[in-house]
Length: 310
Image 1: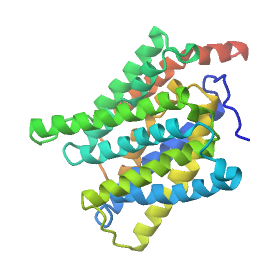
Image 2: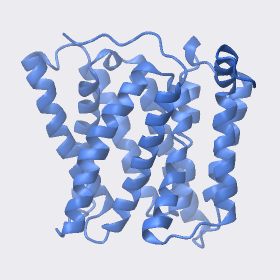
Image 3: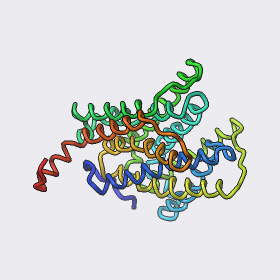
């Protein structure tokens, strides 16, 4: 029997915050892993392979638990929609990188928390106050300051790439709305992930074939990168993320995920020698300030309850 989705989600506690921080590190590291072997396997192909491996894992899990009736519980339609939105995010991002800079792509992709918050305003527990909207604005401004700069490319090309990256952010943000509103939100976590990675495997591998990006040169670094992306990113981290989405407020989780590109750049500097400038450091401080503003009420409330001076 499929477990029912918890109807009451709560603000982030310390455990949730630590899990999200760990996920941000993992998701930041995936960008480094993809970049390190991009000459041997195109990023789109890497994504298709990792999602195919994860789809096999979650597909076996779902059908072993539920048998032939696994897709007959009324979740198929919204599950396919959820998986399609998830896939579009990666397709848009992959195409954006061909036309604009990685920095621009990160900025517009991480507009996703804004679209999630907008789409979830009809739910009383997800509704944000003015101060919290101010926090989201400050955090997003921090992303802009940290990553947005001159690209050296033609303006028309950059604008087109930026628009694709923004559509990736819309797709990501609205996929969380689909999860909250659709019947797939009542499915078990493993089935929710299966819909996403299954659709992503089909669409991204098809897109890679259509755009002639299927070349794979196997080596030890490529094998390790694909294993990390499949086992750690597409299986372990997605299980943890969807568990969080079922128990905590989506808008708060999405905001904290803004730390992902920060960790990605920091790991790139540490492992690949990418430079970090003062603008990036200042932008990071703005992101952290925005997160604190959004969660200030809960922090102060807990401090008061615990007798901690504020």
